[in-house]
Structure formats: structure tokens, C-alpha cells
Amino acid sequence: MTLLRFAPSPTGALHLGGLRMALFNHLYARKMKGKWILRIEDTDASRKVPGSVEGIQRALDWAGLDYDYGPDRGGPHAPYFQSERLDLYQTYTTKLLTSGHAYRCFCSVDTLSEIREKLARTGSNTTYDRRCLHLTEEEVARRVRAGERNIVRLNTSGTFARRPVIDLVFGHLKDAHGSLSTDPVLLKTDGYPTYHLANVVDDHTMGITHEWITSLPLHLDLYSALGLEPPQYGHVPILVNPDGSKMSKRNGDVKVEDYIARGWERDAILNWLALSGWGAQHEPEASTAEGQPSAGVPSSNKGAPDSTKVMDIEELISEFDITALTHRASSLDPGKLAYLNRQHLLRSAATIDGLTDVVARVRAWMDEHKPLGDVSPKYTEAAYLQSVIRALDSRVVNIRDVFTLAPYLFVLPNLSSTEAQGMIKGVSQQEQEHILNAFADALNDLKSWDHESISQCITDVKELLQTRRFLPVVRHALTGMKVGDFSICLANAHLVQDGPPIVDLLCVLGRNQSTVRMRSLTT
Picture 1: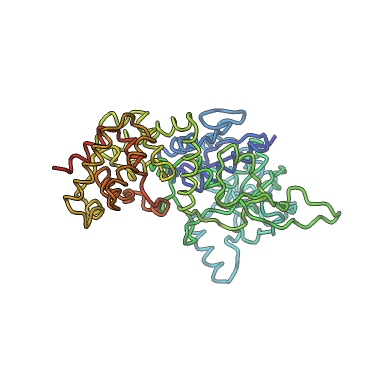
Picture 2: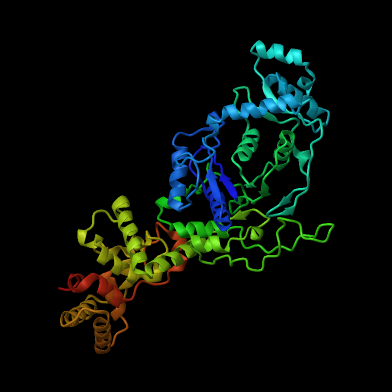
């Protein structure tokens, strides 16, 4: 059975790059009818941030990425915190020491620094002179009994059985062992393993079959030294900032919790992350010597999705193709997220159940953030919010836009603003009152307050008045805005060109509120 793992470190909030990796685990595992694990790699106590694990779990839960086994769910290979598996790492470390594939190093931090500097001055690429490798067993035992602090290093002076690696994304990989430090540390002085030892031991003991990995050469050596079968590997290039710099939770707008707080759609975020780096076209890999394609080698992928294809999680699972992942780092385009978010909102609002869900989230946003302060309870009713969303239609990019685009549907418009005054520039007070009185009278005479009746009324009054100022004057009285306020969501401004039609605004506001606003501007 296919078994993958997502193994974040509890060093802060989950960021977009981490969520993307969890998403790829989820998509591939579900595509292959397999499972995936949440494993917390907390062996570096100095970097632990309180509350990080809970934050990671909340973000995954929000995203609907339901891992099969993990800290809060248990599973056949518990515990799922590496800090609770130290006895296991000690067992495997002892195996490596016994076989001669590892040795204890008693050098102090200062001594190691001096060795590195000395080797660098000679032009050597090595980072350690292996002086502790040559200690006798008796000397090592004596120093351990004396309580001397030591680390355990992998002995790379010998040879390991290394097989060619066929990556699930890149195909055949070049041997990169030359980039490794000399005899990397496996076990630290505090008894905690380094990432590399813990990763290999846990992946083996948990039965992980596929792994996204960046420390491949060292891990392959460890598998060989321990006599273990490595999993299949897939390298996924990282996400970077638009300027090409590495995306980091310490720098800027990358925390998942921030995107949740800003009202972005879950499906849009997942869609956005999945398409970033998915959709590349690759040439087929060369055949083996026997003339057969190599197992696991990416093939030509002619069905890669468009860069803005709208897909929910089930569609992502169905279409996911690991061979179509890019070989280059990818950056995230905020404009693409805005586009995808609008499309997912439109999808949701097209069904009764979906519209009900959108309304519930708009109401929750209003209750939590109070973007317009306290509003009348009638404006928070489900039926009213549904009418608002229908009126705004495709203009809504983010649920926040309900309030930034049309605050006048919840509070009285600010008719003294520069924008509001500009809407009636050149219109005399007398002409303004004439237009508003005529239209308010006609609306009051309507027997039915519906879209068709109001639309006909607008047509009749326009023909009667014969002025091109009719619509600007009415819109000014009802809204005080041409389009909407993008002071909060400037990135979306290019997606909205105009406000809702007057007839839609009148339908939402109702007869009484509509005529009251118009009459307030007449004497």
C-alpha cells in the first residue's frame, strides 16, 4: 500500500509551502488509494514554538487534508512525535556503531571550528579530519564511561552499495554525494538524533513507501549502512517569492492562518497551490539498456492542467499527475488566487447548499471583524445576505468584498465623500431633486416590488425625464459610490469594473429604504 508522510517541524505557523507539500501528499495518497501520516519532527528543542503543532493541525483541518495517522489520531506506528521515539534512534545508532558505519566523536565545538578553518586554508573540501575515527574501542569505552560529551558521526570513509536513483519527478538523478559534509552527525550530545537519522529510521519503521526529499545522498548512505530498502523518492521544487528569494514564514505574507483570516476560499487556496508547479510538459526519459522504460520514470504528460483551471479537491485528486510537476522553483501569483477565488465563490453560490454555506461564512466574517461596525439585525438575516450576494454576483472576489464593494447595503451611504460628490458634479440641486422625486413617486406606485416591475419603472422614468443624468443621480442617492471601496483589497480592483445595476440594488434595499434615501435629498 502507498504510504506517504508530511513531517513539519513545530517552529511556527504552517506556511503556504508546507500546506502545498501536505496537499501533494494528500493528492498522491488518495490518487493511489493509499494513506498518509502527519509526523512532527521536534528533535530540535531550541527551535520549538509553543502552540505550533496545534496551529498546524488547525490549518490542515481547515484545508480538509485529512491525514490518516498522526499525533491526535494514533495509528499502527505511534508515537508520531520524534521526541517520543528516542529509544528507537538509539537502537539504530548502536547498530551503526557495531557495524563500523558510525563512530563517536569527542571533539569540542571549538576544536571542530579550528579543524574546519585549518582544512579550508589548505583548500580541502573536507570539513572534518576524522581524528576520532581512529580511536581504539578501549579509548572510546573509557571516555564514554567517564561521561565525556560526544556525538555520533556516519563513517563515510568506506563504500556504500549505491544504486542509481530514479526520481518520480525528475527521473534519473546525478550522484550528489560530493556535496555532503565529511562524516555527517547522526546523534547529538543531548541524545537527540539529527533530522537525517530520525528521518530514515522513522520512514523505515513506519513503512513509508514514497518520500519528497532534499537530503537524498546522505539518506541513501544511511539506508545502505543499515541494510534497509529506501522508499521511492520525489523531489518537489520549492515555492519562492516573486523576486526569486526563498519563501520563509519569517518573511512576509506566507502564513496559512493569515489567508484564512482574510476570508480566502479553502478550495481556491488548494487550487492555487496545486497549480503552482503542476502542469509542466516533460520529454519521456530514455529507455534502459534492455530497451524498456525505467520503472517510476516520468513519462510525457499531455494532459497537464491549464495554469488557471478551476478544480475542487476531488477534481485535483482525479487529475493529479506527479510526472507533470515542474523541475523549477515556482512563485505564487496573487492575481491568480483572486481569479480562482472568484470562480470558486461563483461555483458555490450557484447551488442552494453552496449559497447557504457562503452566506454563513459572510455572516461569521461580519460578526468577527465588524467591518462596518454594528449594523441592523435585519442586514444579517440569511435571506437578505443571499440577495446581497446575488446582486453583487461575479463582482465578489473574496467574501470581504461584500462589505468593501457594497457597504451601502448595510449602512447609510456617505454622501459627503469626494467620490460621492464627484458622481453629481455639474448637476444642479434643482435637477437632482426633480429626478429623485419623479423616480420615488413612480416606485411608490408600483403594485409589485420585483425585478421586472422595477426594471420597467426605470425605463419609463428615463423616457419621461429625457436626461442622461438620471442613473448617476439615482446611484449617488442609493450608494454614494461608483464601484466599491478597495482600500482593503486593492489587489482585486482590476477584476471589478462597475457596481451592481440599479435595478438589483433597489431589489435588495426594498421599497421603503430606497425611497427614504432618495427623499432625504429633496426638500
